Image 1 (cartoon, rainbow, N blue to C red):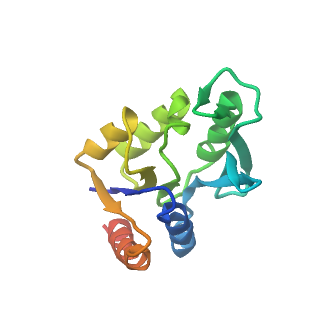
Image 2 (image 1 turned 60 degrees about the vertical axis):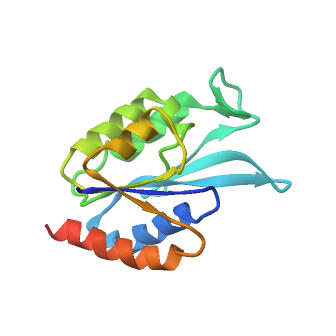
Length: 174
């Protein structure tokens, strides 16, 4: 089992945890991205993806013009797919992948779905986050035999960081 899925309710600290793991495992040249909420007037108005090379892309926002939407968010599908190409086409010597998050918005992209499944099938560890609920691809990933699920809560966040650091280190040394 070389893939890890970090789940939890919104606000549990999944993104914070994966950002910290990216720093811990920097020497393994990780490839992937983390997402950040865009806050405007105290509410979430969109999401930005930041890859580990320093590129970023607002891929979902209430004010974007797009035919594709999830809830109140319009999705820049073309822009997100280009961002995915920039992120995953350059890597050659990576030891592992970080993906935050496998969620409803990202799963609207066929390219994203294809990349995720290819990475999960590959030999290098994939560390990803996902909401505790989910259907389609999210549910399929949770059912995979090669995926270990770690639930994070506000209470266990620090323990999970230590635990995941040990588990990932072991995966990289196999």
